[in-house]
Image (cartoon, rainbow, N blue to C red; front, top):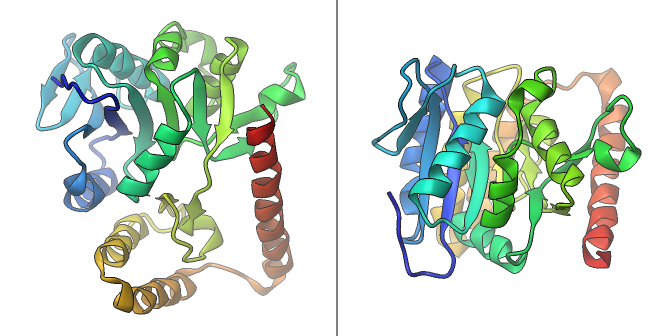
Length: 275
């Protein structure tokens, strides 16, 4: 599959499915950021397969499980890649995430090679778990080195059947002594702010077509020369304003959310450097 003498080799392992919106978003990824990956990186779209075999075809890895079994699909994909490649860094993602590839990979290298799971940190309620284990890496991009990938293959999905997959992965990693590290991101689907970052969550729960349109605009921004970038960014921000679903009564709560976002960024940056 992939063997390289480069000291850093990256695989973007992207959850995919046969639903029309996922197929559309996958096509957009293939035509935008994934098309510009350097020689030491590869994007692989992960699909469930009714057959009992693993099959890699046209950068799609078919694994023996149902598409909806996201956690099992992830573990099977990681395990297969460990056996069939020498990737040093794994990024588990989805079809509605856009990556500013060069900057993102540079940030991953800066994290080093010792055990970690990294990405945008969020908090959830886990009954019977200490507060530290309630922090998880959001599924838009869960990044980890090869040594952590080997740890994650010991996870048994049946023990986490009622858990969101990103919470399960983060919790299992934490219980095995793996650090959680923060990587900032933009979330167009929630904040509607056109802030360039190393990766951007483009998913919209209210309109499934927006992810593709956002990725196309982001591709135009990152591929445009500097003098024209502000105009493309303005176009993206106008697009977000036109497609926002705010109601007047939610504006105050939205402002509080943005404030909490920046406070959490400051908090986790301090947390990152203090470990």
